[in-house]
Image (cartoon, rainbow, N blue to C red; front, top):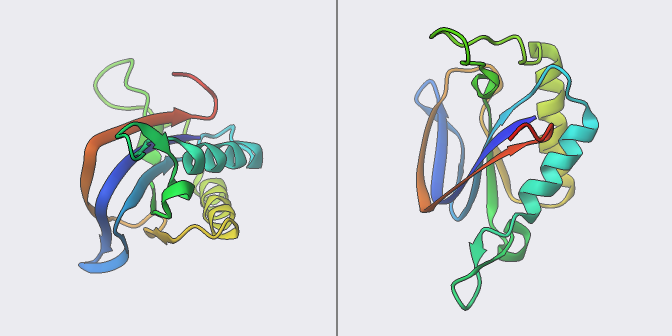
Length: 149
């Protein structure tokens, strides 16, 4: 499972010009599901995202997590994170999970966040979406449950 995590002061996702989710202070998570992912990858990713210490403390150091700050999550599915661009100029999608598997694991990711009572908004799986955000810092972190980078 791969994620691009961005610390934001605000963010919104829209489908067909209608907002499907928005947050103020928190994290935007672009989430890609790998063909080999399991529920263990989901649990690892949820734990990592919620506990990343990328928010400033009183001394201005990045020592606080989303849970510490009471921030919100905006989670958007994005299979393109699994694009392999090492050969040629057109990405290969062979590492991306098939839609049924990806949708199920994406749903489990959202449910695990809800179970931890994190304020949560999301996009719409497989929809064409427009995402707008104000990256705070900017802070952007890349995560991979298979630890390939």
